[in-house]
Amino acid sequence: MTTIRHLAASVLCALAVSFTAHAADNLKVFPPLDEGMVRYVINVPKQRDEAAFKVELQVGKIVRTDAVNRHFFGGAIETKTIDGWGFDRHVLRELGALGGTLMAPDPKAPQIDRFVTLRGDPQLLRYNSQLPLVVYVPKDVQVRYRIWRASHLIQRAKQG
Image 1 (tube, rainbow, N blue to C red):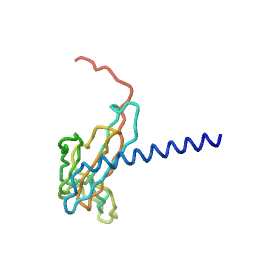
Image 2: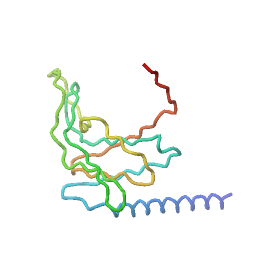
Image 3: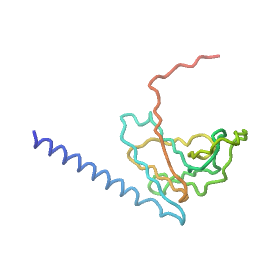
Image 4: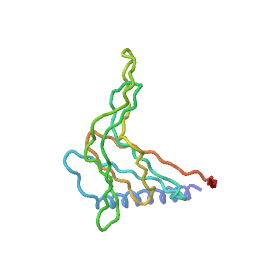
């Protein structure tokens, strides 16, 4: 029994090392960083039906704001394909100005720290466990993400 456990542990370690080496090899094809930029790499786990998943990128930074208004940054993420490889990289050249709604908060209310993202619709990307999601952003910007999963329930639309 102990031998089987050791064998299973050895196989899992070998697979983890192989995956890590493969992921590192994939990163070699990405261009070097421009001055003042950082690279974030997201590796998602394998799923049985990856077409039912999406990855939402949330790009922004933590700022002190009031608790009433909705805030956002200007800016746009460009998706660029690396010639000859078909790998995409997502690039935010600069984070634009901070904007927000104009509701009047209580002047005595404390300000809060919150993660403020780019304005607009969420950036939903194809889910692919075989390739890393690579995002280039300015040094003071953070990249966060969440996984979206489609419901198995498909409903029929009514004519009308």
